[in-house]
Length: 606
Image (cartoon, rainbow, N blue to C red):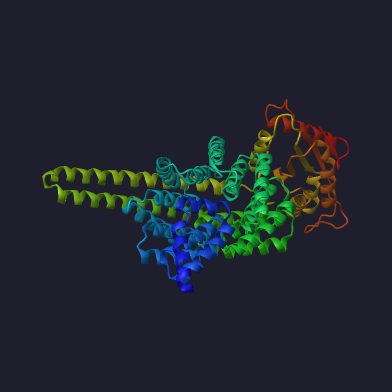
């Protein structure tokens, strides 16, 4: 009797279970509550042996785990749900669970498997004309492609999804698609115009979201904050991300909190606040580990390594770098290898380990080449697959239309010529990418052979970028020229080899004495230049005294312990009236000349 009553309850529940669009809205608005409801329905359905109701409950649970970025829950539910959907012959549910499996594989860093699952979901949806599921599968694959830095391919899928969703009138899915388009435009080498367009797409997405849908709203806030951060509008980025953080805390969602802490840490590090950045990165790690999100655990460890290096905490920085290396090996992604070796070179250079930094640069170049080769191979495979598909279509048409044999042959010839042209274009793209990567390696290697500091060209490029990037009316840019006192007599009395050791030791002392965002480079001979963004000229004496204290206790092979090394320094702040950096350098040089004429071992401000 109890079993029959339970069966009746389950039957009613199955009949009244929300339509799939409503199910998505429920999962997006309160996924934790939706999981609890789904599990209750699942238990009832299993007790009654109602497989249809059981499948509906599994779909709600999987959608909710996806909204929470809970990878273990998503992976396990998708596996069980897919087996049941295949047993029942439910094609839409199959597409959905295959797509969720692909996203889970992406979170685990298993990229080739993830792409194969996405393609399987898309093919199944196309075969059975499931437009809604096809649009979702397109968006999901675009998400994975963006994560692999293949934004141009991602855009193709997003445009297809957008067209389908507009036709279907799906506001919730259309919102996430618009935000995904914004994400595809948000990348390191994007132009300001592209990033402003990304902001516009995120704002359009936000306009479609019901304010009560907190989870979807927090996702768009996060994406919008990232776009502002790439635009270097850090104040606006911070404001938007703080809203996202508040929602994450309100919903007690550790993964959202982890995402925001990671991004705020990146902004703090870009601003030169390494201590604040370190706190953010370390707050993000537990959330990513709990969600088994190796991708974001990796970038958080990278952020920790950089922050600790800026704070000159050598052992901790190298430990974080080693943890990042182990995660990169698990990800097995050439793109992640590029990021790892790029950061490794920066960390070792910051710690004064020039041999290790140079090794990392060489490995960076190799990783860049692997990225280019993988991209070219992928392009060729896709072109071959497209050609093969079109060729099969043409052959089938020949069988159906015997009277058009000659026309079909012409089509095959044109397709072959088209494929050849596209392959050539792919090879040209590879050559262009290779040239760009070589230029990047050359830029990273623009260091002075003796001291390991940025050489004259490199430090001036940095100075010009900071000079032109400052806001009008902001005096937060100081440039100083330094000349080691009586350096010729050092060479004459102690020898050029000792002079070289003094220059190297001076460079190390300068790196340790400056702030994280400052840059020191060798200007030539015994002359150095220091670039200090976001600093008022009133702070120059403090910098001088820190340098002076570090240099007075300098130790170098062959340098007498009882002899103090001194230097003269001329500093100036950029002015609105300066048409270019050369005018600022000229004032600093004049101030240096006065410092030397006024007795050396002193600072003069110009």
